[in-house]
Length: 274
Image 1 (cartoon, helix red, strand yellow):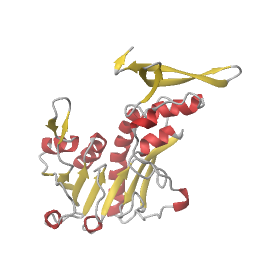
Image 2: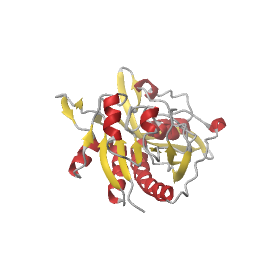
Image 3: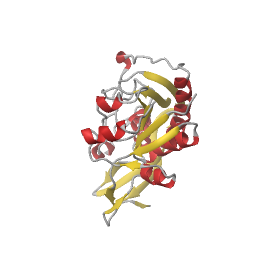
Image 4: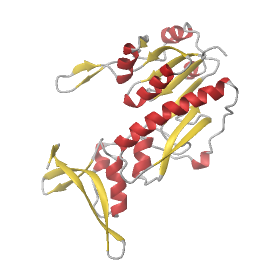
């Protein structure tokens, strides 16, 4: 079977292992689409997104459209004569005309076990809600928010030491492996789509800094999950007088016959370790 012509769409660090897996695979990656460079740091200098850096290192053409809904962009993609589009954390909702452009459509690497945790922050909410496992779902994209058919799920256990930071790395690597498996099955017509069970669907909206404010009246186990889910961003915090402290690496301390009474961990004041 001839190699597929694939266009990759992604932007942040999470998407890097997926693109690398595609580059290491048997198919032809014709280019990468990512969001425009952004100003970062105190100097507000333009910084390229991680996908652009990797793509340029590998000699891939890079597209950074300010809008993916223009006729000009669609014509540019049509000219690539694609078989498939692969998306991992691109950061914008794709229009139907783009999703349905290749014969095999568009598939996405989503960081949860769908239909649970649809949305922008699935890894964070899985931790905050105390889930024991998570994973990735390779899914056929449609115009909804992570509502497309499931193609291939891959599970991953969550440990008590996991944070959003550690899970991002694990799930990103798992996503690349699962994607290659899914594409191989897709070529052999052995990847039947499975409709999502809407009754099991949950949402994973973007987090805000305010959600990190710790309510010390909540059970220790809940705070343990909250602090880990908000590490490294936006981070959990509390106050001692007028001093603001950020909390990391929590542990639930068991006392009085195994009952959970308190939380221990590390904290920062104004971004400095203490």
